[in-house]
Amino acid sequence: MSVTLRDGVRIEAEGVGTVVADAAAPDGDVNVTTHAHGDHLFDTDAAPERVVCSTTTAELARVRRPEAAFSVADYPRVELLNAGHVAGSRAVRVEGDERTYLYTGDCSPRDRCYLDGLDPVPADVLVIEATYGTPAYVFPGQDELERRIVEWLNDTLDRPVLLFGYALGRAQKLQRLVARSDRPRLFVSEAIADLNAAIETHLDVGFGATEYDSLAPEPGDAVVLPIGSARLDFVDRLVEERDAVTAGFSGWAVEDSFRYRGGYDEAFVLSDHADFEELRAVVDAVDPDQVYTQHGFADEFARELTGHGYDARALKEDQTSLGQF
Ligand SMILES: [Zn+2]
View 1: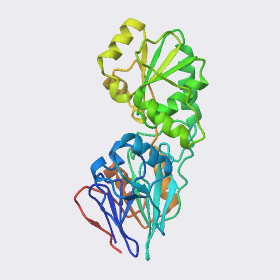
View 2 (view 1 turned 120 degrees about the vertical axis):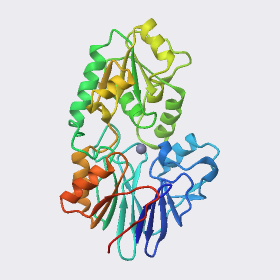
View 3 (view 1 turned 135 degrees about the vertical axis):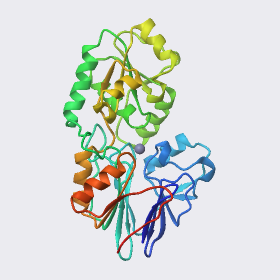
View 4 (view 1 turned 45 degrees about the vertical axis):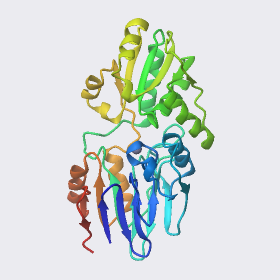
């Protein structure tokens, strides 16, 4: 068996074949897309004919890759599990002849807004994300985080707020939090509105947001925008002319530098990834013989796990990691 990282995660599973997950140009016997974030999604011109993914991820992939031709497939011994990261996100469990493999993709075990968290299942080999795989990143409880945000939305009611988060994931949760606040009007960008529509079709959730044409927010308005637009000129203009307050939302907001780097007036911890303790708990629940870590603090998290008796290593691109079985 081998698990490698080369344009996605490649798992050679005995009796199943090569399972390729989250590749830009997937070429496995089985191709999996765990969720529709850009760095996990296939390229338009390299879309595989058959993709293992949730119907929600397929719909979101069609929004983001409108020209791509693919159909949703399933295979025996390849099972999708809720990953709790963003709408439609799944982990994948592969039942090889000799071992079972679990690839989490991006994951969170927390129930948040309309998402249920990842429920880990046992596997012999675990490939787990490690975005926040170091002890500095332990988040407060979800209720507490959400309460702080809603309180702030109410405390600043006499001004418009511009809320920045990833267009898929954070943006939808921010809309749900605005709905819980006293703010009467909610606007979103076109990109977020398109993703909202796809999610509303598949999940039992409504966002109640209006896509704006030209942005001229009034006091009391909330505007949810893609995080990449935080440094654009129009934001400065709205701050100056409309007295808008800006806020960024991320797990990285644990560090003060997140607010300064983004130029936000306020920053709040709100994440679609597991924090350090949650990652540890996922590993313990899966109880694997072999762990591969990837993304973020992959080296640190592998060392942490090794210290707790696991056979763990960071998965690096272009480096074969043959198991020692
Ligand atoms: Zn993601």
